[in-house]
Length: 292
Figure 1 (cartoon, rainbow, N blue to C red):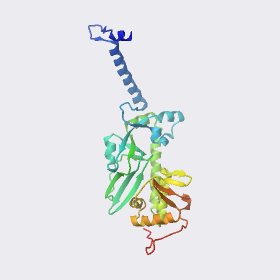
Figure 2 (cartoon, helix red, strand yellow):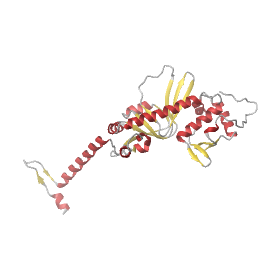
Figure 3 (cartoon, rainbow, N blue to C red):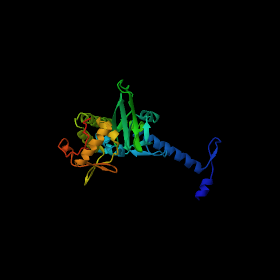
Figure 4 (cartoon, helix red, strand yellow):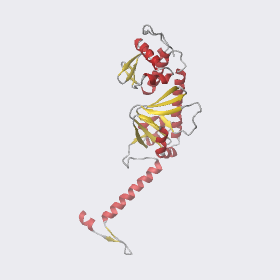
């Protein structure tokens, strides 16, 4: 009977073209999809209809909904953001955002290393899971000789663009969540600046590792695991020290029982409250330990 119904043809009034029930079904399905997109545009929900990879806002960074009422937060967390994968190497992150019409991005996994060079000296900043990278148009300081990003491991980011703007239009408190999140990142950067003022490289290095562990560390029965593999040169860039000095400092910290090298990164022993306390020191014979 279904086959017979599909073979039946209808003639539109006024001599229009004949149509079949199957033709009507396809037109209705097309109209239904258009209706779905109208709902999406109203609510800010973006689905994976085009096959592109997406992620829920809750999975990207749940704290962005902290200022919403519980019912609104439950809905806002379902907003889906497009995801882009970044391969290892140098990257112009501003171009990535502009090419995708995004005003920012949230790091989902992996590590981005931001390098800023003043003359012959370079400083580093790490951006990892949960960090927000905004699109900035402010002119670079005349003091900065070079600045850029390097992807140190396969990394994915959730793009903040039209989908997020539609969500903010419906739930304005999301804008407060974004601002609060950026404020927390600024505090971490301020702490890194203070760490660089510590006189001893040993203390700088250990304090920096604990700072990174606050964001990406994993508490284990043996200690706090920091699953971030960095070269000695990169560690030096984070704390304002040269690579040979960092190598000596790591030796001292390991010998003093403050940390252990692991395959996935570093295992921090004790607690941050032990910073600055005297530790057993084993220096290579014949070589003084420099403090910078």
